[in-house]
Length: 246
Image (cartoon, rainbow, N blue to C red):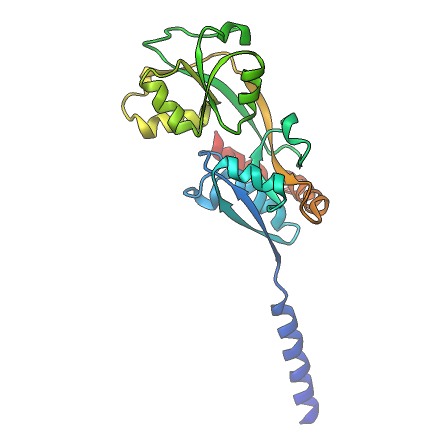
C-alpha cells in the first residue's frame, strides 16, 4: 500500500513540476498599420503573426502593446522596450537599435488627388520640388525628403495626411500602397477613384523587427527570433501567413 502511495505521490509531484513550467513571455511594442498590423486584426495582423509563430517554435510567447509609432520608437531608443514591429533598417536608428532578418517587404508610392495632379508620376526627388509633401513623423522618408530640400509638412499619421490631401492642403503623401488603399476605402468610401498612386515606387524595402541596443539580452532575443523565422519559413507557416497580404 505504501509503495502505491509513494508512486502516486511521485507522479503527482512530477505532474505539478511539468504544469508549473510555462513559456517565457516577452513584450513587443507596435502600432496601427493595417493590413500589416492592427489591434483589430486576428492575432494583430500578418506581421505580428509572423513574430508570434517565430518565437513560438522557440518556446517563447509574445504580448503586444499598441502605441503611436513615434512613442514606440522612443521606447526602443530609451531601452524601455525590447522590440517593435515592423521597421525599415534606417541609418538614423542604427545608433540605438538593430534589426532582425527581413520579415516582409513594403512598396511605398506617392498618393495624390487626380483632379489636382492628373497622370502624376516622377523620375527622381528633384521632380518633386514643386510640390508640397505631407511627410509622416517618425518615418524614414521624412528625413530623406528634408535632406533633398523638398517642401514638407510633418504630419502625425497617415489618416491626418490623407485628410489634408483630400482638402487640397498638400499635393502628395508617401506610404505603403496596400495600407493606403485600405485607408482610402475606410475614410472615403465610394470615392476611391478620386485618389491616384504613382506608378513609380519611392521605395520597395524590407521590414524588420526592431531591437533596442539598451535592452538586456537583446542579442539573445534577436538570434532566437531569426532562428524561429527560418524554421517557420521552412515548415510552410510563413507562406500561409504572408498569403493574407496578397
